[in-house]
Image (cartoon, rainbow, N blue to C red; front, side, top):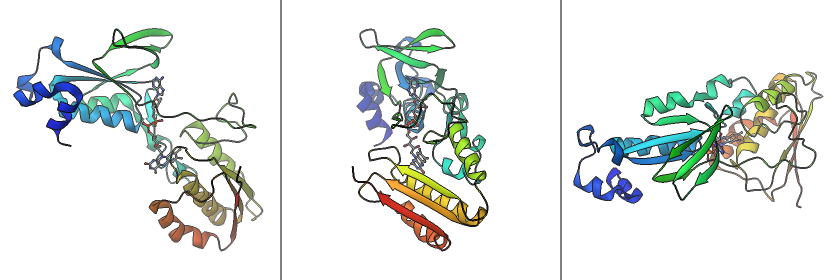
Length: 262
Ligand SMILES: Cc1cc2nc3c(=O)[nH]c(=O)nc-3n(C[C@H](O)[C@H](O)[C@H](O)COP(=O)(O)OP(=O)(O)OC[C@H]3O[C@@H](n4cnc5c(N)ncnc54)[C@H](O)[C@@H]3O)c2cc1C
């Protein structure tokens, strides 16, 4: 979709077809089209960037996120074997906003007033509102804790980290792997939830990394994977990883895939 079609599709068609989108044709501040976006992950931040790029001075784009920075899940498995650090994967949203000319407000969105077209948010115990003409919700999805995992334990010390959201749990999992015995007796058990979940190949990528870690840093060991799915959720990337990496890894690391069909 080109810029003109895009602007039309969000309701600025008349403006977009009657005037080029340059600073000199900026509308009066009062008539600037206000777009609020909830969620500064890859989805929300990408939409904010491109709406501002394509809408220029005709749009005011405000991105809201509960946190000041986004910690990327993508590549976070590489923290486990020290190829990346969490610092490498942490992106302050104010930097993303200033680079891409949109507004960032830190605050947890608690309500949406559709009648008055306002988003209600709280930050540091005080509330604020953001007006909008169009609202985009990109809050991602949350983790559902299975039986046996206590959601109230601190991320840095919980004994069974899911490391599903990059952050303290990723550090916790990395530290647990570091503490495993180095004599080939290490045993790791991992579970994969039933689809749908975020990033289908993610758990298999993690399994490959852990198996490789055991082989290269712990003189072998075993990794047992309990997968709630009827088959491996393969993608091209994981297939390549499997072909290049795990085939060698398996030579002295036993990898067992147990399928539980519930
Ligand atoms: C270990 C792992 C590895 C992965 N690897 C890859 C990969 O290699 N390639 C790939 O494409 N994908 C990968 N993924 C998947 C990818 O991370 C997700 O698809 C992506 O993060 C989803 O982006 P999102 O913007 O929809 O949601 P999120 O990244 O979850 O962002 C949502 C944002 O909304 C904010 N938010 C939520 N509720 C509120 C509220 N009430 N008020 C204000 N803000 C709120 C949150 O703070 C968050 O910043 C991986 C995932 C994991 C877990």
